[in-house]
Image (spheres, rainbow, N blue to C red):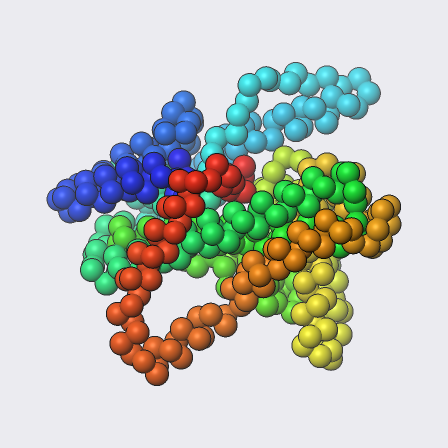
Amino acid sequence: MVFSSLVFLFAFLPMALAVYYVAPRRAKNAILFLLSLLFYAWGEPIYILVMLASLSAAYAFGIAIGACRERDPKRAKRLTAASVSVSVAFLFFFKYYRFFAENLSRLPGVTVPVIEGIVLPIGISFYTFQIISYTVDVYRGTCAAQRSYISFGAYVTLFPQLIAGPIVRYTDVEAQLCHRRETVLGFSNGVTRFVAGLAKKVLVGDALAAGYVYFRESATLYPTTLGAWATVVLYSLHLYYDFSGYTDMAIGLGRMFGFDFPENFNYPYISQSMTEFWRRWHMSLSLWFREYVYIPLGGNRKGTLVRYRNMAIVWLLTGFWHGANWNFLLWGVYFAVILILERAVLLRVLERLPRPLRHAYAVVLILVGFLIFSETDLSAALSCLGAMLGLGVHAFAGEITLYQLTRLLPLVALACMGATPLPRRLWRRLLERFPRAQTALPVLCIGLLTVCVAYLVDSTFSPFEYTQF
């Protein structure tokens, strides 16, 4: 079940809100835990057992680590390593075992049995990282071990961010698990954020996805340079609206239930370097790798070469986290090389360039990066990259390509403008000049929701990229 489905909008969410708000305060975490399990069971009932096994092991380890952290640090460290190993083992088996088995079996004299029928549990990458952050923070003394299994289970399985994040560290919501207060203002803000995210994902993201699919498929019959650029631009915009829209919905749902989740996007396409881009894109993932991989490896405290080594490790892991395929590893290497070069010399060069050139530099590298990200078939990615450079194409732009681009131009222009702070600034200026315009917000939300529902009723095409991670 995804948020942009009629079942969720008109069955699960109203039922969840009604049950949650009717329940006494002492039972709210239990209600959230049960609701989250029901939400997960809708798509993958058997994998509830995997999630429960993973969170139960982490809960037991957390209690043990908290009990001996001060009096026996070495034992606490061993328990932490064991807990992280168990979590990683679940993730490895379901997400990476087949990849390693198939690739190792290609080596001379090596045969690793391939287990058929392994399906990637939805959300396992996200809830595994949340569990690991909890375990490590208990060991560090950043937070106390959670004594309530129900509260810990509610944290791990919390359905608003279970499928696609943001990655919520335990320290982000530790106090809210026990002492949150639901307010009318928080609920209304949550509804507004949810509807905005739904509109981004359904009305813009899905339309961009349809355009991307068209140009990607047409390239196999009649490749053109303009069509290749359109493919990459449409995919990059689609991925942003798809993922950031879903994140907006998750943050909005969290507010409806009294939680304040961290932001995950901050207008990444206005960046003027890759370093800036990764401070703005999927911020919760970048923060997780910085806190639990980069800094423990030594960060930038042990010299330049160690810093670059640590950056390379982080980006290899970031790429591999996204999927068990060579294109994701190459994607990680691609950004590792660029970010290391920027840290070494390019940022100083970029500072001397005009802002438009810096922005063009960032946009081109982002587009190439997402081309690698989008194609599990590396030969297809190379063909598209060659077409972008005018290689192996039938023409710069065919008549059908020009017609389709003209038809999509208003959507692309709207998407480009919406990926900047301009709409928010215009809205704030409108409120400053006409404060009563705020009263139109509920009407606007109802209108947007109605249009989204009409689209969902009529459409059978509503992909969501991050369910595969």
